[in-house]
Length: 223
Image (cartoon, rainbow, N blue to C red; front, side, top):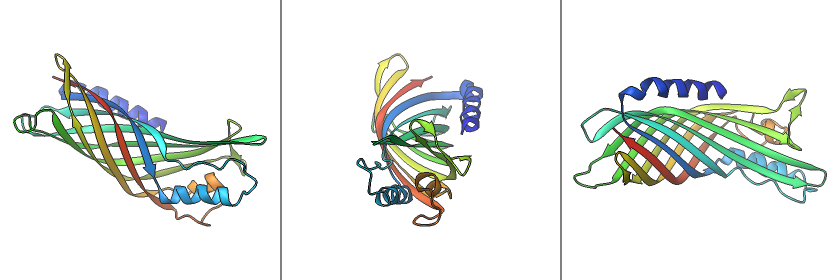
Protein backbone atom coordinates (compact mmCIF):
# COMPACT_ATOMS: atom_id res chain seq x y z
CA UNK A 1 0.00 0.00 0.00
CA UNK A 2 2.84 2.41 0.86
CA UNK A 3 4.56 1.66 -2.47
CA UNK A 4 1.34 2.37 -4.37
CA UNK A 5 0.98 5.75 -2.65
CA UNK A 6 4.60 6.68 -3.42
CA UNK A 7 4.35 5.58 -7.06
CA UNK A 8 1.13 7.57 -7.54
CA UNK A 9 2.70 10.72 -6.06
CA UNK A 10 5.72 10.45 -8.40
CA UNK A 11 3.48 9.85 -11.40
CA UNK A 12 1.33 12.89 -10.68
CA UNK A 13 4.41 15.08 -10.14
CA UNK A 14 5.95 14.08 -13.48
CA UNK A 15 2.73 14.74 -15.43
CA UNK A 16 1.85 18.05 -13.78
CA UNK A 17 3.37 20.20 -16.56
CA UNK A 18 1.02 18.77 -19.22
CA UNK A 19 -2.16 19.08 -17.17
CA UNK A 20 -4.98 21.38 -18.23
CA UNK A 21 -6.86 20.90 -14.96
CA UNK A 22 -5.92 19.65 -11.53
CA UNK A 23 -8.52 18.51 -8.99
CA UNK A 24 -8.32 17.50 -5.35
CA UNK A 25 -11.37 16.36 -3.43
CA UNK A 26 -12.39 15.11 -0.02
CA UNK A 27 -15.63 13.30 0.75
CA UNK A 28 -17.65 11.14 3.08
CA UNK A 29 -17.83 7.56 1.80
CA UNK A 30 -20.42 4.86 2.51
CA UNK A 31 -19.30 1.31 1.75
CA UNK A 32 -21.17 -1.97 1.34
CA UNK A 33 -19.40 -5.32 1.05
CA UNK A 34 -21.43 -8.49 1.58
CA UNK A 35 -18.41 -10.62 2.53
CA UNK A 36 -16.93 -8.12 4.98
CA UNK A 37 -20.37 -7.76 6.54
CA UNK A 38 -20.69 -11.55 6.88
CA UNK A 39 -17.30 -11.83 8.58
CA UNK A 40 -18.13 -9.11 11.11
CA UNK A 41 -21.63 -10.45 11.75
CA UNK A 42 -20.14 -13.91 12.36
CA UNK A 43 -17.62 -12.39 14.76
CA UNK A 44 -20.50 -10.84 16.73
CA UNK A 45 -22.69 -13.97 16.62
CA UNK A 46 -19.96 -16.33 17.86
CA UNK A 47 -19.10 -14.03 20.76
CA UNK A 48 -22.39 -13.58 22.68
CA UNK A 49 -20.53 -12.19 25.71
CA UNK A 50 -19.82 -8.95 23.83
CA UNK A 51 -21.67 -6.02 25.39
CA UNK A 52 -20.86 -3.80 22.41
CA UNK A 53 -21.16 -5.43 19.01
CA UNK A 54 -18.55 -4.74 16.34
CA UNK A 55 -19.92 -2.18 13.85
CA UNK A 56 -19.79 -2.90 10.13
CA UNK A 57 -17.16 -1.25 7.98
CA UNK A 58 -19.51 1.23 6.33
CA UNK A 59 -18.51 4.81 7.14
CA UNK A 60 -15.26 6.37 6.00
CA UNK A 61 -13.39 9.23 4.40
CA UNK A 62 -12.12 9.44 0.84
CA UNK A 63 -9.65 11.75 -0.84
CA UNK A 64 -8.51 11.83 -4.45
CA UNK A 65 -6.43 13.78 -6.94
CA UNK A 66 -6.93 14.04 -10.71
CA UNK A 67 -4.92 15.36 -13.64
CA UNK A 68 -6.83 16.21 -16.82
CA UNK A 69 -4.66 16.59 -19.93
CA UNK A 70 -4.78 19.47 -22.40
CA UNK A 71 -7.62 19.11 -24.89
CA UNK A 72 -10.04 21.56 -26.54
CA UNK A 73 -12.83 18.98 -26.83
CA UNK A 74 -15.71 18.38 -24.42
CA UNK A 75 -14.34 14.91 -23.61
CA UNK A 76 -10.95 15.02 -21.91
CA UNK A 77 -8.64 12.30 -20.65
CA UNK A 78 -6.76 12.14 -17.39
CA UNK A 79 -5.52 10.03 -14.51
CA UNK A 80 -6.96 9.68 -11.05
CA UNK A 81 -5.69 8.43 -7.73
CA UNK A 82 -7.94 7.95 -4.69
CA UNK A 83 -7.52 6.69 -1.15
CA UNK A 84 -10.24 5.76 1.35
CA UNK A 85 -10.14 4.75 4.99
CA UNK A 86 -12.87 2.93 6.92
CA UNK A 87 -12.80 2.09 10.63
CA UNK A 88 -14.82 -0.13 12.95
CA UNK A 89 -14.18 0.20 16.68
CA UNK A 90 -15.85 -1.42 19.68
CA UNK A 91 -14.93 -1.34 23.35
CA UNK A 92 -15.84 -4.18 25.69
CA UNK A 93 -14.80 -5.20 29.17
CA UNK A 94 -11.00 -5.44 29.38
CA UNK A 95 -10.40 -5.02 25.64
CA UNK A 96 -11.09 -2.92 22.58
CA UNK A 97 -11.19 -4.22 19.02
CA UNK A 98 -10.54 -2.10 15.94
CA UNK A 99 -10.80 -3.05 12.27
CA UNK A 100 -9.15 -0.87 9.64
CA UNK A 101 -9.83 -0.95 5.91
CA UNK A 102 -7.65 0.98 3.46
CA UNK A 103 -8.59 1.17 -0.23
CA UNK A 104 -6.44 2.73 -2.97
CA UNK A 105 -7.36 3.20 -6.65
CA UNK A 106 -5.23 4.29 -9.60
CA UNK A 107 -6.71 4.58 -13.05
CA UNK A 108 -7.94 6.31 -16.19
CA UNK A 109 -10.36 9.26 -16.08
CA UNK A 110 -12.74 10.43 -18.83
CA UNK A 111 -13.99 13.95 -18.09
CA UNK A 112 -17.00 15.52 -19.82
CA UNK A 113 -17.92 19.20 -19.60
CA UNK A 114 -19.92 21.34 -22.04
CA UNK A 115 -20.11 24.99 -20.87
CA UNK A 116 -22.28 26.01 -23.83
CA UNK A 117 -25.12 23.65 -22.87
CA UNK A 118 -24.73 23.09 -19.11
CA UNK A 119 -22.41 25.67 -17.60
CA UNK A 120 -20.78 24.43 -14.41
CA UNK A 121 -21.92 20.82 -14.67
CA UNK A 122 -19.43 18.04 -15.33
CA UNK A 123 -19.17 14.27 -15.08
CA UNK A 124 -16.26 11.86 -14.70
CA UNK A 125 -15.99 8.20 -15.60
CA UNK A 126 -13.06 6.53 -13.81
CA UNK A 127 -11.82 2.99 -14.44
CA UNK A 128 -9.16 1.91 -11.95
CA UNK A 129 -7.08 -0.88 -10.56
CA UNK A 130 -7.91 -1.16 -6.87
CA UNK A 131 -6.09 -2.58 -3.85
CA UNK A 132 -7.16 -3.01 -0.24
CA UNK A 133 -5.66 -3.71 3.15
CA UNK A 134 -7.57 -4.96 6.20
CA UNK A 135 -5.88 -5.21 9.56
CA UNK A 136 -6.93 -5.49 13.18
CA UNK A 137 -5.80 -3.80 16.39
CA UNK A 138 -6.49 -5.24 19.83
CA UNK A 139 -6.28 -2.77 22.71
CA UNK A 140 -4.82 -0.29 20.18
CA UNK A 141 -1.93 -2.65 19.37
CA UNK A 142 -1.51 -4.56 16.07
CA UNK A 143 -3.11 -7.99 16.48
CA UNK A 144 -0.81 -11.01 16.05
CA UNK A 145 -2.40 -14.36 15.13
CA UNK A 146 -0.36 -17.59 14.82
CA UNK A 147 2.79 -15.51 15.40
CA UNK A 148 2.00 -13.39 12.33
CA UNK A 149 0.76 -9.82 12.07
CA UNK A 150 -2.91 -10.12 11.19
CA UNK A 151 -3.51 -8.37 7.85
CA UNK A 152 -5.20 -9.10 4.54
CA UNK A 153 -4.46 -7.67 1.10
CA UNK A 154 -6.87 -7.47 -1.80
CA UNK A 155 -6.65 -6.62 -5.50
CA UNK A 156 -9.27 -6.03 -8.19
CA UNK A 157 -10.85 -3.44 -10.49
CA UNK A 158 -13.20 -0.51 -9.95
CA UNK A 159 -15.48 1.70 -12.03
CA UNK A 160 -16.78 5.05 -10.76
CA UNK A 161 -19.23 7.71 -11.96
CA UNK A 162 -18.96 11.22 -10.55
CA UNK A 163 -21.26 14.22 -11.06
CA UNK A 164 -20.43 17.74 -9.94
CA UNK A 165 -21.17 21.44 -10.33
CA UNK A 166 -18.38 24.05 -10.32
CA UNK A 167 -18.49 27.52 -8.74
CA UNK A 168 -15.72 29.93 -9.64
CA UNK A 169 -13.86 31.28 -6.63
CA UNK A 170 -11.07 33.44 -8.02
CA UNK A 171 -9.19 33.55 -11.31
CA UNK A 172 -8.68 29.90 -12.29
CA UNK A 173 -9.83 28.34 -9.01
CA UNK A 174 -13.15 26.56 -8.63
CA UNK A 175 -15.06 24.73 -5.90
CA UNK A 176 -17.58 22.04 -6.70
CA UNK A 177 -19.85 19.78 -4.64
CA UNK A 178 -20.11 16.30 -6.11
CA UNK A 179 -21.85 12.96 -5.80
CA UNK A 180 -20.31 9.71 -6.98
CA UNK A 181 -20.98 5.98 -7.09
CA UNK A 182 -18.40 3.24 -7.57
CA UNK A 183 -18.50 -0.51 -7.99
CA UNK A 184 -15.82 -3.14 -7.57
CA UNK A 185 -17.29 -6.34 -9.03
CA UNK A 186 -14.38 -8.56 -7.96
CA UNK A 187 -11.85 -7.90 -5.22
CA UNK A 188 -9.67 -10.93 -4.54
CA UNK A 189 -9.04 -10.87 -0.78
CA UNK A 190 -8.77 -14.42 0.62
CA UNK A 191 -7.64 -13.47 4.14
CA UNK A 192 -10.29 -10.94 5.18
CA UNK A 193 -12.23 -13.54 7.18
CA UNK A 194 -9.07 -14.71 8.92
CA UNK A 195 -8.23 -11.18 10.06
CA UNK A 196 -11.75 -10.37 11.25
CA UNK A 197 -12.92 -13.69 12.71
CA UNK A 198 -9.81 -15.96 12.84
CA UNK A 199 -11.52 -18.45 10.51
CA UNK A 200 -11.07 -19.11 6.80
CA UNK A 201 -13.69 -20.37 4.37
CA UNK A 202 -16.31 -20.76 7.10
CA UNK A 203 -18.77 -18.09 5.95
CA UNK A 204 -16.96 -16.00 3.33
CA UNK A 205 -15.68 -16.44 -0.21
CA UNK A 206 -12.10 -15.56 -1.07
CA UNK A 207 -13.36 -12.51 -2.98
CA UNK A 208 -15.98 -9.83 -2.51
CA UNK A 209 -17.77 -7.10 -4.39
CA UNK A 210 -17.81 -3.53 -3.07
CA UNK A 211 -20.33 -0.73 -3.59
CA UNK A 212 -19.43 2.80 -2.51
CA UNK A 213 -21.32 6.10 -2.51
CA UNK A 214 -19.59 9.41 -1.87
CA UNK A 215 -20.46 13.05 -1.53
CA UNK A 216 -18.04 15.87 -0.91
CA UNK A 217 -16.20 18.91 -2.28
CA UNK A 218 -13.64 19.28 -5.06
CA UNK A 219 -11.10 22.06 -5.41
CA UNK A 220 -10.15 22.66 -9.05
CA UNK A 221 -7.39 24.65 -10.74
CA UNK A 222 -7.86 25.21 -14.47
CA UNK A 223 -4.98 26.42 -16.65
